[in-house]
Structures are given as structure tokens and as C-alpha cells.
Image (cartoon, rainbow, N blue to C red; front, side):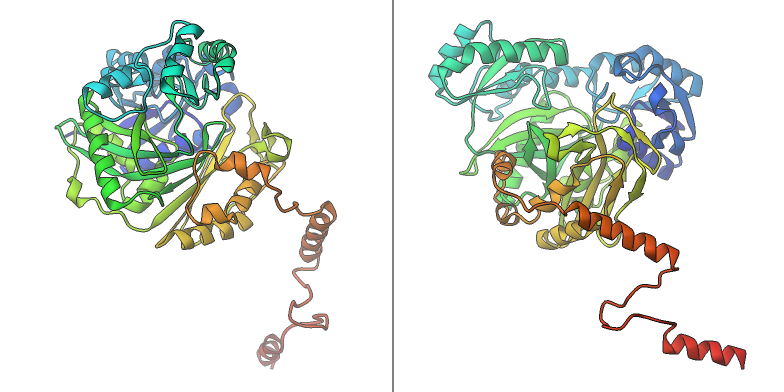
Length: 502
């Protein structure tokens, strides 16, 4: 099959950089697009070509199909990779790409539509025999209808937006009196976020784990699963920490979950990379939640434990190539944990923290991967999702992966803005997390417990002052293991100098 020559990346930030790297490793030219505030962004610098697509608001740039296709035509690209977010799950965009003569690197529009609406997805999964959380398979017409159904299901229940994601249009209801206001609020939020106010009802699973299964399907009828990711650590239904494999999943549960995920994908004619999301209860039962018809933010943890490059595989599948392996060839090795690094202030209710990155020290070393879209001097805009980077630790065991992440977090510093890096330092010291007992309620419980106080301001000033002193004196500082100040070169250095001069 003929490989693409040039791919336009219809996205920004760290995922655009990630896709550009995959293109370059395959010998494919990469084209970036950028809004006015992203003119100096890292993904623009990394690409072979870059084209402006409009003002900062996403509706006028990264969500503007006409402008993106116009950039693709000008660049001479033969395919478009949507990344995640923005237009990645928009079937109209996929169709527009095909109509304009560009290969869309993702699933067919029909599969997006079959899984894009959560109510439609539930109907399709019911026909395919996939277990899902008890609830309605159709949108609710009124709060009264919701109350009747909730009474049958039993409280607590969850209202969800049919077209939703990321916690938008979602409400947990513990009793009937809460339903009328929650119903209207969920519909209003869903309408604003997705342009669709349809909501449906689910039985709330108490203390669930959020576990997802990565699938890949080519255009030749081959579909495989690549193991699970545990995404239970969430804040306001947004994933914060992800790991693979899940501490709660046995080999037998993994096999059953994987086989069901493959069945779900095949039921809607799915091709390319996708993710089937499940909720698992405390007894090990699991239920279909939804399908993400795109590459996931957390795909690096799967790449590390399988040794596969999911973005390159996406490109190869879109080019018509068959998967180069079968299910029996997939072996999971080691453990990987990812932290989503956001520009937000944990001390101020995680309020967004845009602004200039005045200084940046990034971690590295054995088992550390950093997928980042920032650099010193970059101005983080207020217009988009505040995700800056993804820090991933990989090792032979979960314990060792945690240790590597602790070390990496100590090396990580972003100056000029606030980030959520302090949160991860606390999480990786938590007894429940270390025991592998985290569920979707972890962070809310965690936040209610007293946390170690952050370093005092005078201690930070002392550290900065020591650094300035070291820079001014050429690195001459006192030895940690000596009571006497270091007053000159070491004996071996002095001996070498004398010998050179003799």
C-alpha cells in the first residue's frame, strides 16, 4: 500500500507535536495549522510547514472545517490527522475531508455516529450483547419521566449528556427531590457544550473504577485489543492520572473485557484506533460506558507496555496497510503511569493559570517520557484546554514506576505560571494509591484530607538565593559532608595543575 507523503495535523499543543514526530519517523512531511495566539507554538516550530487558520477562538480556527481544508489544499497534504478533541470525533469533518480528497486518519463517519451519541451507542451495544450500566437507552423527555425511571432503578442515579464527554452535562442525584433542578441544569450545560440538550439516566455504580480498553482495527477485518488503562483518578470527571495495566484487573478479566471491546468495535464497523470505556464495580463486574472514536490523551501508557507506536499504526491503517500482528502477538510488559500536567492553580480551586513560562526544567532519565507542547518564553493562552504536557513513568513494576515519577516530579519546574504538579507529589505518597485501591471517588476523598504544607516562601527564597550565589561564584559552595568551607581546588586537581606546569 502506498504511504502518505504529507499529513496535515488539525490540532495544537502536545498532541500536535506527538503526531508530527510520528510523521517524521515514517519519513512523512508534517503540516501544522495555527490560530493567531499559537503563531509561535511548539507544534508550529516542529512542523515542516505551517498555515494560519484564524483568530484565537476555536470556533474561528481549530473548529473551522473550511479553513483547515483550505490549509490542507495549499500545503498539498494527502491526509489529515485530527489528534484528540476539536474535530477528532466529528463525522461531518471526516466526510468533508473525503469529499475534498484527503484521507481522514480515524474511523469512518458511520462508526463515529454509531458511537458518538451515548444513547445510540447503548442501543447498538444492547444489540451486540455488550453489558452496559442499567439505565435508559433513549433520551429523557422530562424531569417527571426521569424521576419515574430513577425510582425503578434505585438511587443514586446519574444524569448524562447523550452527546457528552469530560463531565459536561453530568449530574449525580442521590434523591428524587434533586432531579428537577439537576435535569434542567444538565440539559442546559449539554446544550452549551455540545449543541445537543439530550440527556439520559444511568444507575450510579458505587465506588467504581474507570477502566478502558484500547482497540485497533484495520481495513482488512482484523481487530485486536491492546490491554486496559485504569483512569479512575479524576477531578470533576476529567482524568488526571492514568496507568496500565490496572491494579484491579486479572488476566482473565482482561481477556473478557478485551473480547467484549473487540465485539463492540466490530458491531459498528470500526477501523483505526479507538477506546471502549467501562465502569467496574467492587466485585469485578464491568459495564460498557462509551466509546471514544479517536486517539486518547493517555495513549502513551499503552505504547510503553506494548512496545507499539499507536500514532504510526493509525497512519498505516489509514493508508490501507493490515495490522502487522495478531492478538496472540500482543504481550504486556512492565507498568506505566501518566500525569496530565495542567496550567491551573491547585491552591485556587484549580483556576486556569495562563501566562508566560519564564523558566522550565524538564525531567528525564531512565523510564521517563515527557510529551510536551511548551518551552521557556511561551505564552500559555487562555483560549484552550490548559493541558501543557504529559509526564509518564515506565518500569518493570508499578512500585518502580511510582518511584521514577517521584524523582521526575522533583526535577520538574515550570516558572511564571501555576501548575498541578504539587497534586501528583501528594498522590504518589497516598497509601490508597500505593495499594492500588483508587476509584473514581479518590480525589474528592483525597482533597478532604489534610495535606502536607507546601514549602514556606522563605525556604523558596533561600533555594533561589543559593542558586544565584552558585552561579556568581562559578559553583563554589560548601560541601554537604564537611564542616569546613571548601576553600580551593581538590588535591587531585591541584596535583594535575602542578604537573602540567612543571
